[in-house]
Length: 449
Ligand SMILES: *[C@@H]1O[C@H](CO)[C@@H](O)[C@H](O)[C@H]1NC(C)=O
Ligand SMILES: *[C@@H]1O[C@H](CO)[C@@H](O)[C@H](O)[C@H]1NC(C)=O
Ligand SMILES: *[C@@H]1O[C@H](CO)[C@@H](O)[C@H](O)[C@H]1NC(C)=O
Ligand SMILES: *[C@@H]1O[C@H](CO)[C@@H](O)[C@H](O)[C@H]1NC(C)=O
Ligand SMILES: *[C@@H]1O[C@H](CO)[C@@H](O)[C@H](O)[C@H]1NC(C)=O
Ligand SMILES: *[C@@H]1O[C@H](CO)[C@@H](O)[C@H](O)[C@H]1NC(C)=O
Ligand SMILES: *[C@@H]1O[C@H](CO)[C@@H](O)[C@H](O)[C@H]1NC(C)=O
Ligand SMILES: *[C@@H]1O[C@H](CO)[C@@H](O)[C@H](O)[C@H]1NC(C)=O
Image (cartoon, rainbow, N blue to C red; front, side):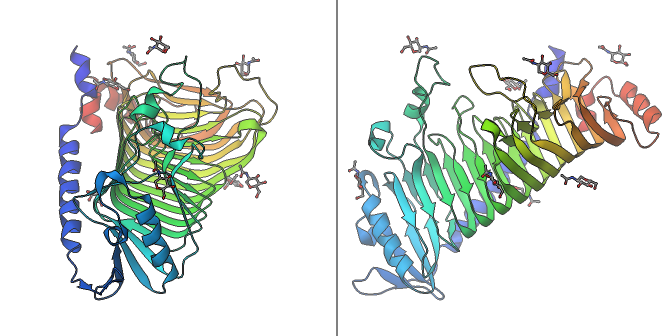
């Protein structure tokens, strides 16, 4: 029993994050009280700097029962056709039921969707009958969009989760909606929102350029299937920061041809950690590169920092740095898996693979829920090159030693390293390392925090 304390929550960190969220949401409420001058009839109002229109003026009732989809679309279409800066507001204190909807651009204006109230999805999957099962709120071709407002977007996903084949294998496997998709967008900002209980993924950027996501809270139960927090696909230039993600799948996943991704100050868990991939499924060519994850706290997650590729693919996962990461009770804290096979059938060994090159793990500390704290299962066809480890301390939750597994993995290491790595260490910290380990045997977790 004494070992359990190694993996108990860091109450201080949680309280710290909590207080900060309360403070930010108070600030944004205050910002909303702009001086508003109402114009007759049109529903358009003007503040000091921009036009404002409320979905209420287009027939939205905000009672959580009435179908407010048409009102949203009308308000959007008006906003989209005008020049200048326009706010489309979902007012505070109301709940807007919005059915699956496609919101298209390009727009003449630069729109801010100010969601201060709550947008909810219909809870019944039957409402998607005859519609694309992968979409709920689907934005496409919109440039210079900002979504903020301190409100909530609730996917009401329980019924979808119950029907998932991951929940009960006797269920047939069907797709389920991504709550919020941004497709072919440029210069998007999403900030200061709570996304919860999505049907499947919470938010996805596909084929976008220049995205900033910040001050988000993404929440779904640990058991909810495939509820990734933020999914990045074929997108270039993404910054994700100052956010808390607790879901049933990857906190952040990065796939297809994506690059220039910068992630910092993220709290993640429960969930499946931060994933690059899966890449190379069905022999695809994919390239994810120039990714920096700097500053993350991972707690009770199924994986920590992960790169996963299917056999038989091609392309690259390269120039990826994970640094300043604190982990608690994380299974597979550091893992590269080039034999990924999320399929009921086992996968054949193939003669090609997505190449994994120039990947760094720097200043990674905390506790592992598995003995194998570092796992590099690289491909026979295309071994991992240029892996680099520096200042790693991953102790076991259960008091024993942790270890590294390496297969076809090539790289180097320096600084303090525990578990011992398979790579030659470029400096002579070996003695220092052993001394420290012995003196901290009694409580490695506290040493690491
Ligand atoms: C809700 O409104 C939208 C937009 O008018 C419409 O397409 C949809 O069919 C409506 N759904 C229901 C269940 O009434
Ligand atoms: C899965 O679904 C089947 C058929 O509906 C049901 O009999 C079974 O009890 C379910 N299993 C679980 C674990 O919920
Ligand atoms: C980190 O993110 C939290 C929200 O999760 C925020 O409250 C805090 O201010 C951020 N820290 C820094 C240094 O920006
Ligand atoms: C990635 O980009 C390459 C080259 O532009 C293209 O051939 C490939 O199909 C893309 N892969 C995916 C999954 O979109
Ligand atoms: C460790 O994480 C697992 C989920 O991965 C959770 O079930 C378990 O309760 C956690 N242990 C502690 C001591 O928090
Ligand atoms: C595939 O390759 C791995 C690593 O060399 C090996 O452990 C495994 O047995 C192989 N699987 C099959 C089905 O040949
Ligand atoms: C990895 O780094 C080496 C040395 O800097 C460089 O030559 C190589 O092109 C890099 N590989 C990729 C895929 O970026
Ligand atoms: C951990 O490793 C050290 C050094 O190799 C060894 O002396 C010690 O007995 C190991 N502890 C356990 C619990 O296996």
